[in-house]
Length: 525
Image (cartoon, rainbow, N blue to C red; front, top):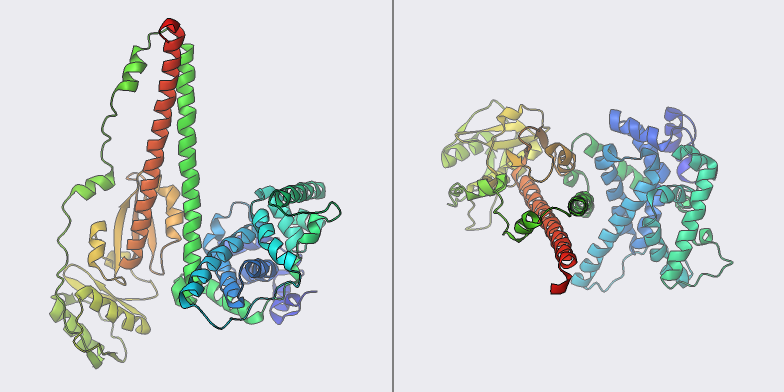
């Protein structure tokens, strides 16, 4: 029995869900409970069940213990956000291994930059390292090769060799016969041996690959780390923003890995576009070969004609329109010394010319003491007021002719949120709540919506307009600006993939035409 199994929390969960943590409900059943019911106990079992493996992987990659613990937290935050999109829910352990490895690599890169910048003279606490120096060289290589195993082989390998399950337990977890697990483990071991040998590691025939893999199930989970992780993940599960419940490094790791996972999906989609283009070109050439007796002037003419100008996309059309004039960049002296909120709203109304509508009266007063001579724009002042209002669980929302204060728990009618154009986001403070319409080109709006939703904050909402192929997004202007920039980059990559596909098709077509001309008139060649 491991230390985690002896904890009071684990004992409570055994009673709640039935059976020991090593058995009872499967990963798929636990994940289903969490996705459908937001069952906190089910998620906690997953953390205790796979936490040792996740922390072990993070320690493999990262030198410092606090970096490993940050990566551990970020891994389970990603699980909260992506739980509903995991295709093979019986392979949660394998999925967590890949995410933990990806998060740890990202954290390692950040830590390296931080260390180089600060030039620390004092070493920080280091995660426990194996005494054998040869193992320290092998460990990152082995983790990388396990990460690159195909999913169906990686899943039993992680369960048996990293999570410490028996072959029978792994077979039950994966829903396949024990013989299948054994054959896939044999294939994985053979693949790892070959890959490690190819990378210059001399493995003698008498040393089995399994002997090189540590049993991460034996890693002891610090209870405070698990408690902090559960508190953060469950807060996010009910809609709180990541930066509000975890440290800055953990929030940055989580957001970065979520974006990376989105880009991987986009790359797959782009690859499909390119593959489809090549297949289409092949189909065209096959058809032309079958119709080789027909004159080739038509295709020849089409191949040599310059490309017609493509019609502008929705985003191009909107970009051609003149931008709305920028908001008044006039700056104002803003200072509040223990002022009642009614006085703050009165100042804001007089300065902006907007009328206050609402009956909400924050308790207490506001104090803001700026540096001497410092002045602020209206968007900056709005952000300052909102930072103070968040302590009162409120949020100032600025509209065309009025402003109001909405509850910060997100329970309000979306009609109260102003709709702005994408190009007007730059005129809003980063904390201002707005909604925008994002035209989607090159993708189906309903397909990309779940990935965009992962990037929204506490106030974020998304509506898919399938007929118009548009997304209506509600969130703070600062977060929407980041999403807009990311989507713009995504569109550019997709457009480049389309152009590349067209170039391949035209090149293949021209190659076939040249071959046909040479075949029909060999004397001229």
